[in-house]
Image (cartoon, rainbow, N blue to C red):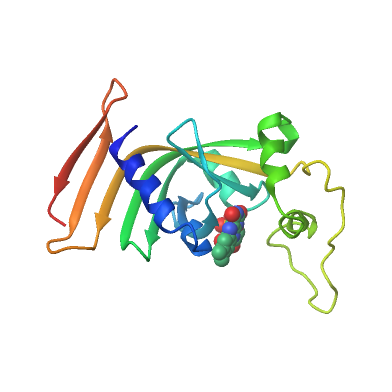
Length: 185
Ligand SMILES: Cc1cc2nc3c(=O)[nH]c(=O)nc-3n(C[C@H](O)[C@H](O)[C@H](O)COP(=O)(O)O)c2cc1C
């Protein structure tokens, strides 16, 4: 297991009672080259070193990552005072392509989470005097439900605890082995 993954596993364990420690910031680049950043929920690790999230395929991030698959994830654990900056590239899987893999993520969602996928097209104008639609067939994911996997290529780890602070860069060599080196924070 790469050293950064051992560290991340510890961070997740130490912060397991804090739901907000499962949120991280995901940065992409739009079609004009402008940076876009938003908060998303971490939904687990896949293929050992890929971070997974769920999203609506009609949201901006989906086509942005289709055009430019590289993304940065920034994750700060308040309790342990650790920051992870992940350099990644994204793989996308929509429910319309089918597959047991996407279905599994849908099944794990609460009813409140599923409901959000029936509100309508994200970003469209709404009339706040009318409630949003909240019914649908919850037994199968709608075609616009998607799972995104962010394969980690590099990790910039910073631990604010201690004096001096600890900062490490983790990179993968051409053979797939991870290397770690400490740098001045
Ligand atoms: C705490 C929190 C968690 C969120 N989790 C998700 C998530 O898991 N997936 C998601 O697509 N959007 C999530 N959002 C909403 C996004 O931040 C964003 O507003 C939405 O995805 C539209 O972004 P986009 O238009 O850039 O794609 C979350 C927002 C907050 C504040």
